[in-house]
Image (cartoon, rainbow, N blue to C red; front, side, top):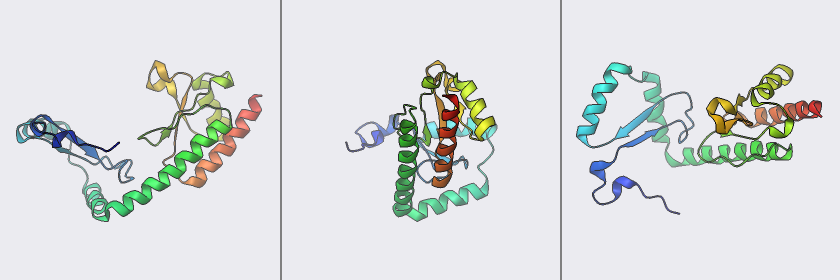
Length: 176
């Protein structure tokens, strides 16, 4: 399916606010740099609110975003491929270990079910951290539908994910 920008459709530019950031598209997690494109009246109203509740983005972050834009599509494509490799590693790893995990779309997190362990998501996270030094977040922190799951980031080195999976497997074997 081809992407269509809503703002490009007839009569929609005046009614569209585009928000974007660099965290996912340019692998700049943590920098908190974003942008808005909107009709002038909406931007003016947003500016009034923004100037009193948020300081400006740090200069280093702004400069990093400019460099990311200058690097262009080849850089973005190489990062997309690397994150795809990490995503496949962690999702396949969880599924191999018996922790059912669907493929995430658009985030740096896997969300496997840990219900098969018999532990609550909070107990699973606490014990995994204490016993194997692997940090994951209880799914219940994201609402009732997250209960019985954990959130694991793959915005780290491939080798660290491999090591985490080895430790998770060791932890799961201790539960048997």
